[in-house]
Length: 142
View 1 (cartoon, rainbow, N blue to C red):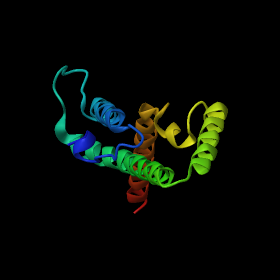
View 2 (cartoon, rainbow, N blue to C red):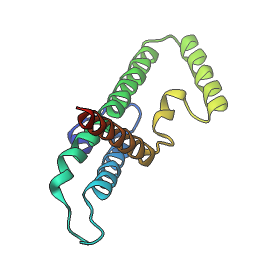
View 3 (cartoon, helix red, strand yellow):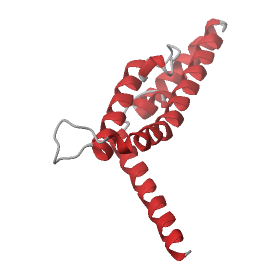
């Protein structure tokens, strides 16, 4: 399962669709790099499927928690604004305008604007390979 079925976002930052695309892209890259054999096009080598799923969870769980927490924070801000006086709302609107002018968007919204999940996959695969080679070297010494 992936997308909103696994991590249903609250609607304050509109990241549900983007998260589903990141989930699918991450899973596709992991399957391609761990389970695809160029000598057998169209056939997945399922021997490394468990490793692919573990890396998928390692990559995606922290990311989805960040999105979920950011969405809740923005929701709390919206609730505060709903209870604010006209002067407070005007002040908050000015602060929002200033942040958008400085950052191109609200900083809390930047978490999804230019995510490179391929880089995360590469980093996770490199870390896993490094860990595996360290474990192999340790066993060889024994």
